[in-house]
Image (cartoon, rainbow, N blue to C red; front, side, top):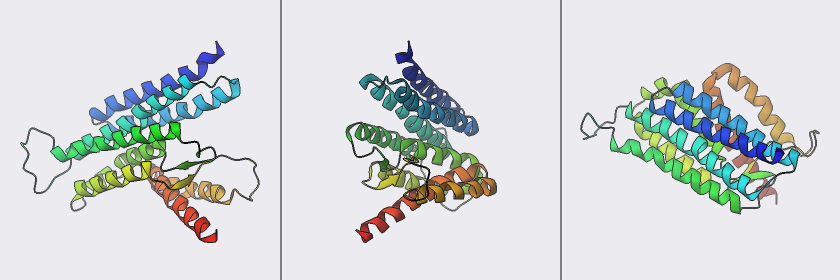
Length: 237
């Protein structure tokens, strides 16, 4: 019986991603983000439960990637597709009853998320950290950005093109050979955990000050801190 528990939790992640996608296509981005967050919680506990119960399996690993592809790949792409259709594409020549063709570029991020997840399954270097941006972090960034700052972004000059540039940057970061730290602790001491504690302490004021947009700011800060840490380590060595 216990061997089915992790896979059941993983399926809950997948179902959350399906529900998030439904709300995204309805234009209810807040609800879509909520179910992405719920999916992320299930994603955290499925691996933990598999390790605690000692029932890790190849099937569970593949199922986890499939679920993540929906929740953290397709769902945020759907959010961005629907969000882009609400923006004013200057110099566009599309029939008014059709979404701007450029909006479909949002789904490129779903493809790169799938590529990353396939790469993750084959890459054994990520035991204590990540190589490239994890898909949950990418999904939470875009969901929080659209929900928290979508109206403000829409007022910027050439807003849709700025969003498209951001999508392409995300696609690059998902598969880039950039080491990024994970919040995994071998011990609770300060030594060797400085970056993790600094990151966690700075998350609190960002959430308090920026609200939902703070979640997007936290992901951006995580990326910058990882890159800076990696560059410092490279120069030191």
